[in-house]
Image (cartoon, rainbow, N blue to C red; front, side, top):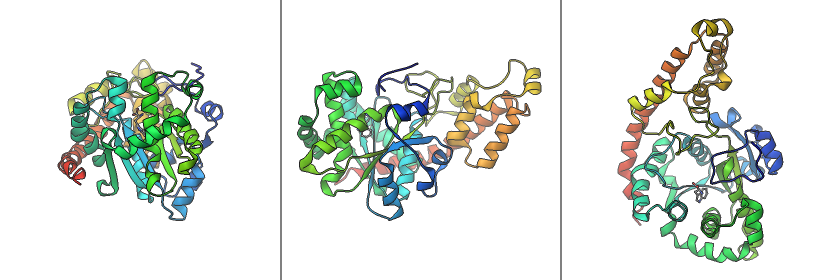
Length: 359
Ligand code: TRP
């Protein structure tokens, strides 16, 4: 499917990532610039970005920079794909980034009709503790709600005269009033840490969010008064859905969620798209294809840390030594182990959440 625009409100996207780099003028991610790469970086899932050198320089020379992400609390669950963003945040935090995580409650209200109170409840009970449980250091992360951050809202108003309708049409292909409001607010989210101190910032994103980065960079360079450094981004590929769609998303029935029960995991894995053959005999003879197998996608993105172990398993699957039933059993086991450990950390994190907002 060819598209002129990347639409951040759609979950459909061209699969040709290389094409995306060219078309949207992104930089290719250079692994050698980033020390101690995590699994997603090492395996090429982090594939592009903007102004990456600014960030790798800060890491190399231990200079101040920040990393920021936001989530819309449109659901009371966090899907597994979100882990990719948080893993990048954790990586950047470990390498010195000052970290910000915002709850985009105003955006959810404007674009999805989510009630602000409901949004707050979901964020406090689910989203924020899930992020901490994934490994973000809560003591070194500033969490905030868009609806409660005056500095961000004031900045959004000031920046609104730096955007034009034509620019909206060029970037998004569309200019609905609610989109205009939420995207300028998002620009303010992205730039506001620089109000205190001019330091580079990086936004880890799925590639569908690049239009927001472009808008932020344009506005940052036009708002001369503030002298903002245009934000950098690092872009990762999507975790495909278990049924083989390009992106795991909340709108799909078979999505994996971070607090899924053992039963849910078993059911979802059983229905996953595999790279196997139609019959057992055929699979033993011809082997199967791990590149078209959604469980291998999960192994690569999240579940198997050890590169040698992963490579061996891919080889065995390709040679017909591993059957789909065994592979599903293994995926179920790894997922259940992950979730049990995660659930413990989540329960612990939940107790800290109130403290984060006292002061
Ligand atoms: N638009 C993002 C979403 O759809 C949420 C968001 C708001 C955000 N402000 C941000 C993401 C700043 C990154 C940076 O979920």
